[in-house]
Amino acid sequence: MNFGILGTGVVGRTLAAKLIELDHSVVLGTRDPAKTILKSELDGMGNPPIRVWLEKNSKAKLGSFTEAAVHGEIIINATNGVGSLNALQIAGEMNLNNKILMDISNPLDLTNGMPPSLFISNTDSLGEQIQRAFPNVLVVKTLNTMNAYLMVNPRLLANGDHSVFVSGNDTAAKAAVSKLLQSFGWEDIIDLGDITTARGPEMYLPLWLRTWGVLQIPMFQIKVVR
Amino acid sequence: MNFGILGTGVVGRTLAAKLIELDHSVVLGTRDPAKTILKSELDGMGNPPIRVWLEKNSKAKLGSFTEAAVHGEIIINATNGVGSLNALQIAGEMNLNNKILMDISNPLDLTNGMPPSLFISNTDSLGEQIQRAFPNVLVVKTLNTMNAYLMVNPRLLANGDHSVFVSGNDTAAKAAVSKLLQSFGWEDIIDLGDITTARGPEMYLPLWLRTWGVLQIPMFQIKVVR
Image (cartoon, rainbow over the protein chains, first blue to last red):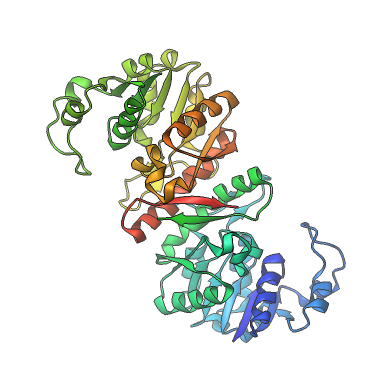
């Protein structure tokens, strides 16, 4: 299947590598591909520039947000939450309409340092904002509750014995996303309900951030024990 | 040990029964004991009036918020979040000072129906508000992330293989609360840090509420898998 991933950070790259491993076709979209490809410094997290990553992952293609959206049958929003709506607008509503948009972003507000607060929460969520802005896109919020390496390889931890959530208004879209998650190794996929339920997984982030602070490494996850 | 529990709802009663089972002495505090003892109707959740409960739990004593606070070496705030600060003010700062206050309340805003939103979140928490209002009280936020029956008997589920959090500024107070939690059967007690980390467990509530909506019963919990 063809995927368009918006965002070339660690999350976008990790998803791209996994999708390619599973024989999907991927275009990674960025705001300005000509500028992005010229970057030679490490990013803020110490990751190599995208050029180095593309040499090692030669089946992945770099393009604009629009090219990624046009290419994808499923689109993945892996941009920073603060830039997500703008990235999707640049990608183009007509290139997104009637497609599944897996929204894995978080509304993190880093303006006051670490740990971040959320710039939307409680009575709204970023998932809902995206759905309202693009009413004909099939938004499914998922995977935002963990580290990128666990997203695509849940069996890295406790042989995959932990939980992932999906929220969205379209049942068929959630089923398609769940099938993709299963292909990553996910077994406990909890459908929380419509897109308003994205408030739950997004508001979990402050607990995730503080647990990360205690454990010192992000290689942890929650299991809904029942 | 002597405990004062503020709040006579299911949470307060369940904690009281467990503490008495463990040979502690408990006064359950309420706003107006004379009025509370006369109640004969079931509460909104179908629970019997406190009079019936007290007949079955004859070692528990009912008193005012003040009497509960005076009695307790450890105080437990089991009031509705919206009334917590007022209940503590009535209990009396001088009766709380230098004591441990286990705050297990949640800032649930039920004014717009179910599921509730939070009336404080993101850049503040109810735990922090209580600590600021009572600077000489040793506030420890804990147990607010689950159903009351699991609070006092974690082994009801997966033989206790799930996690509870503590947040607070005083290390000795957190150690004392952790010891009490261990006496309830808790094994995985995660110290998140100072009282500002209470934002994490409080903001988890929206995910808890929506998971409850899916599972239909509140007998579930999260385990931090690492």
